[in-house]
Amino acid sequence: MTFHPDSLPDLTGRVYVVTGGNSGMQVYSQSFCQQVLISNLFCRGLYTVSHLARHGAHVYMCSRSRDKGNKAIAEIQKDHPSTKIDLLQIDLMDLGSVVAAAKQFLSLSTSLHGLVNNAGIMATPFDITRDGHEAQWQTNYLSHWVLTEHLLPVMLETSKSSPPGRYASSTSPHPAT
Image 1 (cartoon, rainbow, N blue to C red):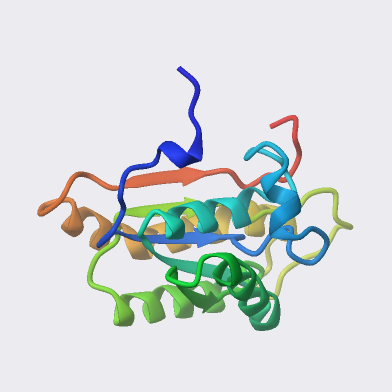
Image 2 (image 1 turned 180 degrees about the vertical axis):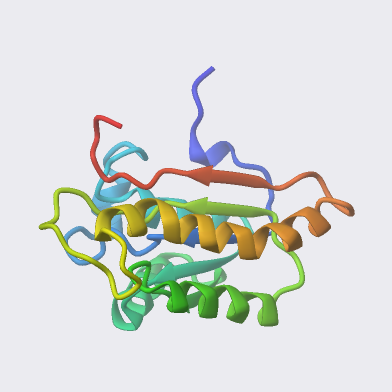
């Protein structure tokens, strides 16, 4: 059975958090992304946000850059004006920023049905974050773990009154993973 994102059910009333949701916006337009497979490494996060929102979900898109995040939201809402997408600013190379974004989400929403940890970096020059960790490891793994730890309690609470939520992690932008 082949999955197609248009087969998603009505997600009205459901809440999702997606990291890396503006990926592809700085180079590729949403229309370009729609012409390629959903798994395309340049558009995966953008496509995830777009399809969840188009099916009625309230999506909190996480982005390091407020400008790029707002541009991605505007691009989606240009074609689908009724979508509900809010921006959470987060820098995965700063654990304080990750905790702040989680707390901001928890102050805005009392439910969470899905968490998609999609942001990632690869083949970057060696660097140490301000937290003292290798940059790629912190961005692709540690920061997503911290975010998940902060959001998991509300996700578990949400599952008491609705079907269990979903967690997905796809943090490497390399197509071989």
